[in-house]
Length: 408
Image: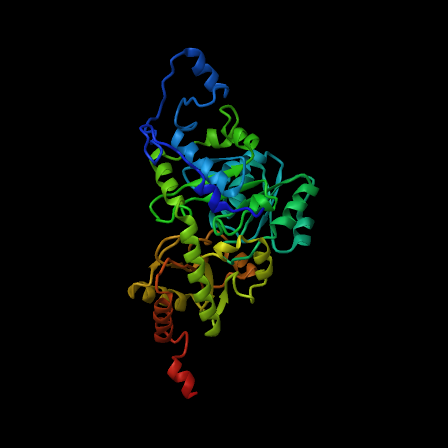
């Protein structure tokens, strides 16, 4: 039977302390015990259902973690205070001095900076490759490689990873495949395609209201236990703990994710088709022109579409900045980083979310100065949005007006 992630979220049923339809929020930093032995057992990890200290875990965090594990189809999950608070402990848990990572060349700038600039301090090296070419990925694997790292849909170039193919490589060489699924929740289920660990920045689509940061690691019970181990667990010892109030807030927003993703995808596809027809260089996985359109289609949970992220190239950074400023002025969205908000967000990733990547490497991977990354909002009237966006482009001579086109 087909995996249906939204059903798994729908089937969760938590009761509050007094019968509330929302689980009670555990607003405590420390927890009391009726016996000293139970406290000792909890420290040793041998007392299920007991809580010791909120850096370790809280009921609210566990509720959210179990909901996200259900969504991704993994045994369990561990939430964190940010997306990077999920990513960095996973890599540090799996890699030690002398180990090697093979990573996609197009990843979130913070992840790139960690792997390129910070991890080498601990003698962990990374090879950045074109993740869409399995032969190139395989050629980069060494005897010291421990991890394959990628994003389902990459930031910001929207390259699509062949998760099944990468999983086969990981199995062949006894590696762990880590997949950041931030851009495609519900649309793609990496664990069902063979990923060992699935990561999200909860800040983005899953929370959906741009009012908090958070992260999650979804995986096996054994791996999550390792991350939480009080003696040598990277998540435990690095201390990126999500606040209980925030966990409760994200859990409430998770319940509408399936509705929001359908609208993000519907609007994204509409605008991508229009922009491409206008002659703009448009990248969106839902377009047949996307080099990995068929791959995405083969992996996706069809109901949720191709996501809300698209890029256009307007030729130069000056034009990109002028267009974004004008669109913000006309209330079409915000010139802001991040994604997954109810209004459209747009940024020039070369000078923002991917600015950690050196300019020569940006050019090599095809990240041009004129690239604008859109996180398409939940607009009810996307036809009106397109008309207004096109008017902005005509004002700035990025597109000719339709009248001029007819005359010529």
